[in-house]
Image 1 (cartoon, helix red, strand yellow):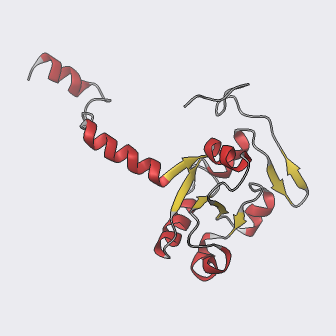
Image 2 (image 1 turned 45 degrees about the vertical axis):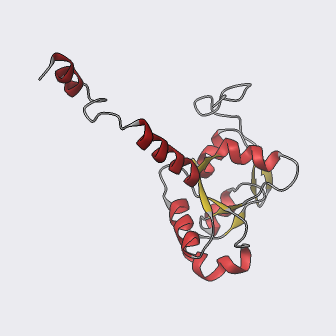
Length: 161
């Protein structure tokens, strides 16, 4: 074993070496086809005109009542098979969200919708990051906006990514 190989093996980051650039292009391209983030969703919803997708909150009615993204459609994951066709146009892409990064409800809703023939993406970060990034939410009592968490959103500017 060379000194360079021994050093790479001891390095926990490089213990499994990075993949080829071609494999990385395939992986990250696929990831972006399946996911979007709250900042991109907020920008699309704030722009004039049709954003080109429907935003779907896949949480329970209790969670929806606690707060949701204004303009989102509410369809709990368990009800997707029986209610999706009545609420969603199969020609329009759907972006799903749930509570946050620790919840896979949005992925389960996206899977159910894809199984019904819908084109779907999952909004990474879910409702938690929507609120933490300082975007407006809605409850039965009206709309509210909390200050952005500086650990999730830069103060006074866009992140530039």
